[in-house]
Structures are given as C-alpha cells and as structure tokens.
Amino acid sequence: MSTYPRPALWAILAASVALSPAAVAAEGEVNLYSSRHYDTDERLYSDFEEATGITVNRIEGNADELIARLEAEGRNSPADVVITVDTSRLTRAKEAGVLQPIESEVLEARIPGYLQDEDNQWFGFSQRARIIFYDKDDVENPPATYADLAKPEYEGMICIRSSTNVYMQTLLAAMIEHMGEEQAKEWATGVLNNFARDPQGGDTDQLRGLVSGECDIVLGNTYYFARAIRTDVSGVTEDIDRIGWVFPDQGGNGAHMNLSGAGVAAHAPNRENAILFLEYLASDQAQQYFSAGNDEYPAVPGVGISPSVAALGFFKPDDVDLSAVAGNLADAQRIYNEIGWK
Image: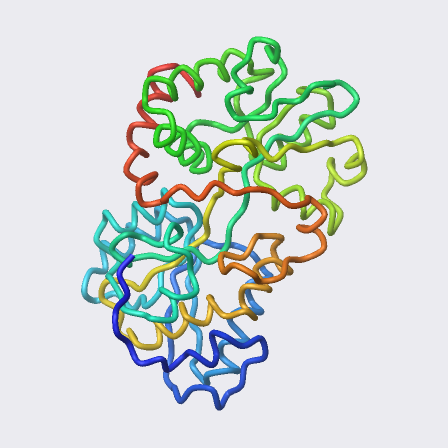
C-alpha cells in the first residue's frame, strides 16, 4: 500500500487508549450511513463525540439499500462515512462509485495492508474468523481444513448458509485466490453433496441446528459463538459445552477472516471529519471496544481482545489480500449458481 502525506492531527488520539477532548481541535458534524446493526456500537459514537466535539448523525439500513441511496443522492448526498460488513459489500460500494480515496498516515500505519483497499477507498476495522463447529458427541474426527468439508465421510452432516450470503461468497472468493477456480468449484460441489439440509437461516441458526441434532458440522463466524459464551443465546448457550470448534487450515493458509470496514463517501460534505472518524476507529480504545462490545477481533495488531473471544484460543488467520479476493466475487457467485448451491 502507498503512504500518503497527511498532517498527523490524529496521531495522539489514534495511539492512545484514553481519549482527550484536547487531543484534537475539531467541530461540526459527521454523517454516517451504516449497515452495522449492533447496539454496542453506540459506545463508539458517543466516545468519538466526547473526544472531538464532532456530532455524529447516523442513518442505518441494509447495505445494498444504502449503496442504492448513495447512488441516487449523488453529489447531494449528506453522507460522510459508509460503514458495512464484509469485503463483498465494501467492494460493491467502491464499484458503485460511492466511495473516494483518502490520505491518512494514521490509517496506513495502524491498519495492516491486506485489510486495506488497494486504492485506499476502504479500510477494515474489525474481523471475524469463519471456522468449523461440530458436535463433540457425534464427531470423533472433525474436519481440520476447509478442504476436508468436501470429503465423502461427512456426507449428510453439514449445515451451512445460502450462496447468497456475503460470508459464503467471500469464502469461496478467497478459495479461488488460493487454489484456482477449477479446484474451488470441485470443493464447493463436494460440500454441497454433504449437506444435511438445504441452506437456511443465519450463523446462529446453523449452531442451533447442530444443538438440535439436524446436523453435526457447521461453518460459522466466531462472533456468533463468542456471543453465546458471553451472554444467553437461545438454543445455543444452554448446550454450548456440546459444541467443539476448529480453526481451519492452521498448517496452511490459516482461518478465513470476514471484515467489517468503512470508507469516506464520494461527496462527503464533512470530509476532514470523516477521515478523523475513520482514524478514531483505528485507535486502541475503539479497537478494544469492537472486541468487548461485539465479540470481534481487532484489525490493529497487538490490541487486546475480550474474554469471550479469547476463550476460543489462538490461531493463524489467513492474511490473503482482500482486494485480490474482491476480484473473485463474481466468479464465486457464478460457481454457486452453476452447481445448484441454493
């Protein structure tokens, strides 16, 4: 990634845990279009307001609806920051022309290069590992890799999400990057043959399917399971000791990571405040809260994680360049369609 010159206005704030209103002289407002629907994010916004005096205004909605709204609003859009989940949606926003490249020494220094858009139009701020969960009572030899999920020995055992789900699209796009399109298609076909049921519901529903006995193996994001450790999740927490987990590909590429990220809107009326907000999201304080408040992994290396996340243990993440993965998303969806993955 390139490093661009920008006054280090936010350097003290970005490196600190305790923010001070005196750390930066700013005023006005910043308008967020966000598809993150987590009540715990309120703390992020209030802390930013307290630290800077900048008022945070927020519109929430479905990612695709927000992108369409930005396109329709054009130069008249009030949006300053676009926040969404998964590389696929960040890529859609970029391709729709609703983001702009920015210059920030803080973001370049804090966010690893593989979690940044190659044109600096978006940056990742939190992560979730997509891992294998299994029924410890019924599965003696759980899959150790993503490739193992396609083995015939697991026929009729797997619950998994629809091919229209962005997490599944990004996973297959990453596999295309690692093994090529032909092998990735063979893998997807093998997993399809091992379904215990047609894809349905979200990641928590897959865990419930495991607990209920509908399936023995599921693929899901870590933060859904960590949430069931930290608080009561109906249909999961009461039987959580029955669930084992595997971080896949620890001897190879590492566990696939999903991203939550943000960028500056193409026609941001408060551009400088928008950049300040992104730099705040890269601060130690905000990074710790992504983990403590929503059971995610920080994007910034070395930042502490919450007990519920730490309970899952250490692992090797896949550090594949997400800009390269984004280039495979159309091929991933085509493969799913061709093999009949609903």
